[in-house]
Image (tube, rainbow, N blue to C red; front, top):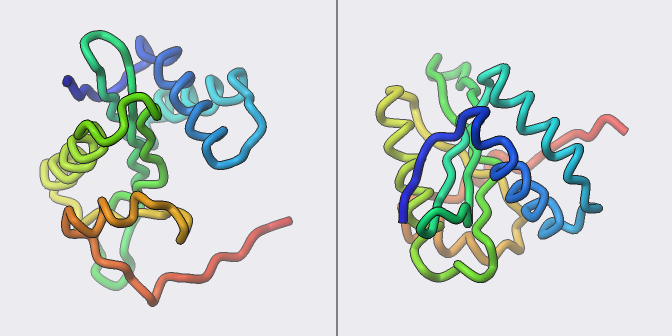
Length: 145
């Protein structure tokens, strides 16, 4: 297992995984849109994307978005995306990606990592086992529709 930080040379690999991730969340497949979204993130450097490889095959990723805590006046990461291909789940890829995300957070000296996921996502047990705590205070979201 290898984890690396993605750059534009990994665009097609990450976009394919990102498209699979979106399908997992019941979105219509859109590889072209996924490719453009990931290309924008990498070009603008407004997120950090980590890719997990089994041998040389990309099998998972996580994406960390830069944000801030106004109260503590510190930067933090929002981990919106964590995905491991179903054929590679329960083999340590998710754990390794999450631990690498923690290492990136420490390297940047950020306050912490916030994970946003569906309440029904079974990965919540994984997050809790790795030290994440559920924050009942952050449960509202307004959608501009």
